Amino acid sequence: MDAVERVLRARGVELVDGREPADLVVVNTCTVTAVADRKSRQAVRRARRSNPNGQVLVTGCSVAVDPESLADADPAAHLYDRGSKDRLLADVAALLERSDGTAMPTLSGADRFVEPRAGRTAGLEGEESSIEDDFVDGASISRTRAFVKIQDGCTFHCTYCIIPKARGPERSVAPAVVLAEVRTALSVGHREVVLTGINVGTYDAGARGGAGDRRPGLPGLVRRILAETTVERVRLSSIEPQHVTDELLEAWLGSDGRCLPHFHVPLQSGDDAILRRMGRRYEARSYADLVARVRRAMPGAAIHADLIVGFPGEDEASWARTSTFLRTLDLAGIHVFRYSARPGTPAARMVGQVDDRTKKRRAAEALALAAEARASFAARQLGGEMAVLFERPLSDGRWLGHAESHVLVAAAAPEGDPLANAIGLVRAESIDPAAPDRVVGRLLAVDRAPIAFGGRPIASRPAPVAD
Image 1 (cartoon, helix red, strand yellow):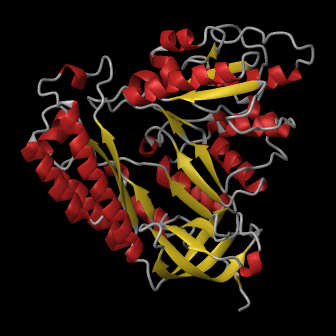
Image 2 (image 1 turned 90 degrees about the horizontal axis):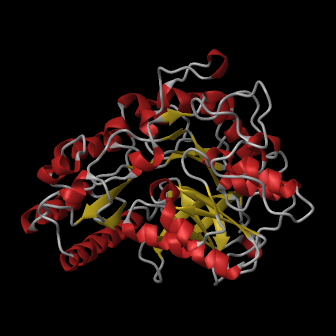
Image 3 (image 1 turned 135 degrees about the vertical axis):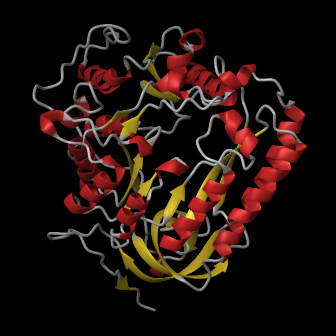
């Protein structure tokens, strides 16, 4: 979706609020839960209802799993399943070329009508180059951080998960393409890059990309990004526990602070029997050992977890073990999901399905634990200094952003100057009365523009703010 936005902005297309009428609407769907599926269908219906004469393009995992329901939601929409979604950017670009107002030419399942230029490096393994390369120069941005896709697909086949069906097997993006995407993000002003994928830890160390480009594995890819670009801040999206290796931590520690001390590591359950039923590849004890290992390497690092409540077979005793285990981890945050049976998955056929009322109760208990974890982590930041990437103003005139640990920080700008996309050195002084998980800080120094490094990138302390 970031890539689609860059194509549209580079062509001078005005992006409007989702509530405003539009000539083109791109809907990205999700199928990870039944609720996500339902919201995806609602989004498609809403897009057509609000834009009866517009073009509606629908992509994402729901298209791959259940295209019929989306076609029912809007028979005129163009659907991009897993086999055709790689043409989405080319189709958007071609649509913008058409000045006669006629209907978009053949899309899903038909021949490509914008051919990639010869000699380009493959994006995902076995795929053609993205047409995006033709349009990114000079594109503007609307967010402070850029998401760079390094991998797609998963073959772990957790028993509850439909993503392997929706996304297929693992494919890694060639390092040259990742580096080009990072440089593009930097060229348009992004200061933080998030390396993302379905299962980023499987980034392929053995396969070869275009022109003999050997893929270095995730730690090696991170080192190349640090050595060959001027990116100031690097994060990962979620990463499986078994993939947080000593080599990855060494890459983080060797980054001079550019790799941020924040890991999102899915847990899903704190009960070993439930983890086995889920098909997870670790036990609760090994997860706890990982948390301790990360903190030994990076004291104060933020670790967020995912949690599924109400999985088949989760009785009161196993839920109690999970709750107790969560309290021992001292996490920075917990993302809570109620188990949702996905069609065709082994978990949907398991005995011991948990009733909705129980799932809702456990979810509420888990959300209370999550709020407590966020507030406790925010409180531990008090008295320290942190580098905050400011993103947006609050209604009271302060600016809000994320520190290296991903904790939210609010601070007043000097003399009301805007802080959008600025990195500020902030002293954490208190907790916001309106948000227990938000730090209130005093701005000590500010850097308002990306720094152009010469040679090997180095850290730079922002200029002091006048009192």
